[in-house]
Length: 114
Figure 1 (tube, rainbow, N blue to C red):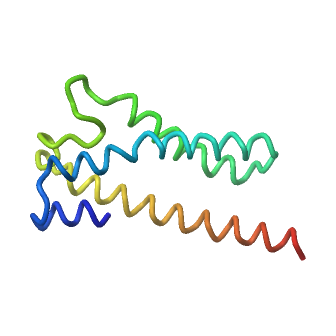
Figure 2 (figure 1 turned 90 degrees about the horizontal axis):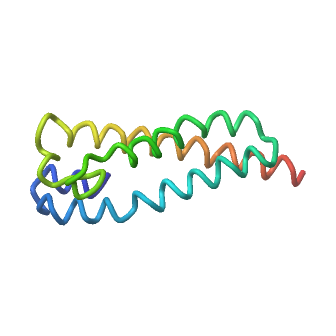
């Protein structure tokens, strides 16, 4: 979110912003897929069903990168067609999702200990 807002305010250029963001796309996809599979294996159905759409979206977004682009975030297209706003909105939604998951996991941890 901070990197995208820096790009929006012209504190950094599009190429450095996209290279910073693209470096974290693959670890995010792998991490979220692993968490989703672990929830399936441990039979936490509600949390698995909550994580499945987000993991599917991350994988879809990674697979559908057009050939010739630098990655999910492309410096030549990030200012076109309102992509910066959509990336910003997606980052805010993911932030809310991860905060929700954090508190759910914390609640499950505390309820198991008590």
